[in-house]
Amino acid sequence: MRNNRRLLIFTGDGKGKTTAALGMVLRAAGHGQRVRVIQFIKADSKTGELAACQRLPGVEIVQMGRGFIPKTDSPKFAVHRDAAVQALAAAAEAVASDQYDLIVLDEICVAIASGLVAEDKVLEMIQTAPSKLCLVLTGRGASQRLIDEADTVTEMKCVKHALQAGVWAQTGVEI
Image (cartoon, rainbow, N blue to C red; front, side, top):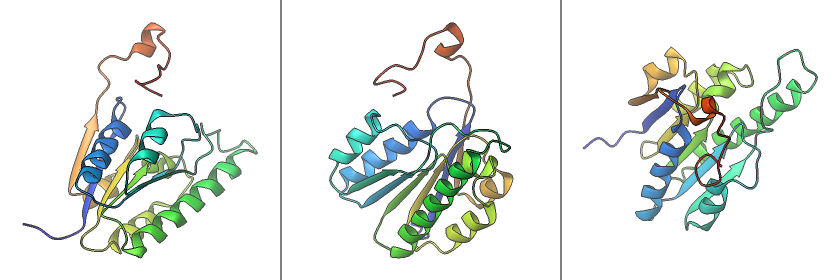
């Protein structure tokens, strides 16, 4: 049995990346493990995942994002970048604390791909992780460098999505 830090990535254009990570949160909580979830993009305080995680013993969840990311030439882009940099600092602090068994960095791959945070900083943080820690990164566009560093990578592929038929996000399904 391996006792090294683990790194899992859920990426791709399909639905289910955060959902898969939250399944791991549920499993870890069921085993009495300590969990921290940091959401890099999401900012909706009324999501079901936020409400559920707040009720799970040993699970901390924090939304640090500002929602949909504007184009880089927008004056609002800097606000999103600052929020993501703060989220990365919170993630690095959580990793260094050695207080958690599982840390989920939700949508961090999007934050990197969008230029909100530096990939090198994320990789440095991963490489300093304690041996017992499991890190989960989610989001579209995981880079090859992240994939190479990971132990397990799952790519969600969109075959069909309800939005294409005009069905908007539904409470309990997407929200």
